[in-house]
Length: 160
Image 1: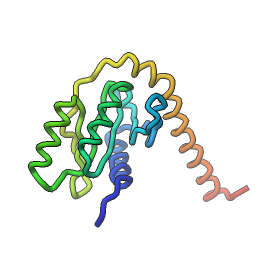
Image 2 (image 1 turned 60 degrees about the vertical axis):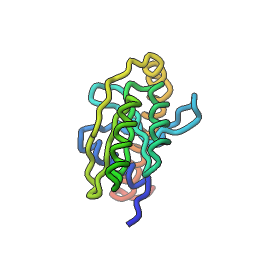
Image 3 (image 1 turned 90 degrees about the vertical axis):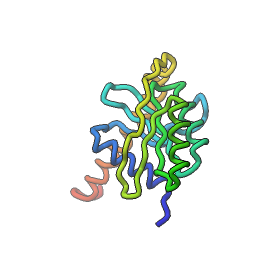
Image 4 (image 1 turned 45 degrees about the vertical axis):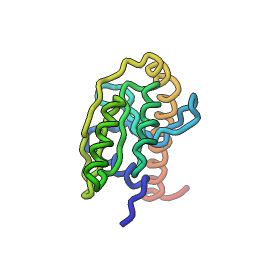
């Protein structure tokens, strides 16, 4: 069965929700860089965390996750565990060296957190996320909530 990045992202969202994380946005825009972050969530300490997801290109995902450190105190790489043990070891070393966290998706769909990095004091990140990204994330969550309300209304009350 072929794995797609969207499947990995959705699986990770489910894992984070199982861990008690509720405020999760996917494909959140970073206007300064004009690119999207795969996932942004608010952890239990009320800090923003970025997660970049890739299937195989670990060099690219590490670069993307490092860019996120400009805005957040924590940034993770999330990807399926490679079958090749040496490649897995290389990724672990590179991620740790970059000061990032690492989340592995195992073949059975379970997730493990390999590394949790030391938090970075990101003054720009706090200002940025307290304005731009917080607004973007909460707007996305609000739209999702409103969509669920409309769906519930249509399924249980009927369209008006």
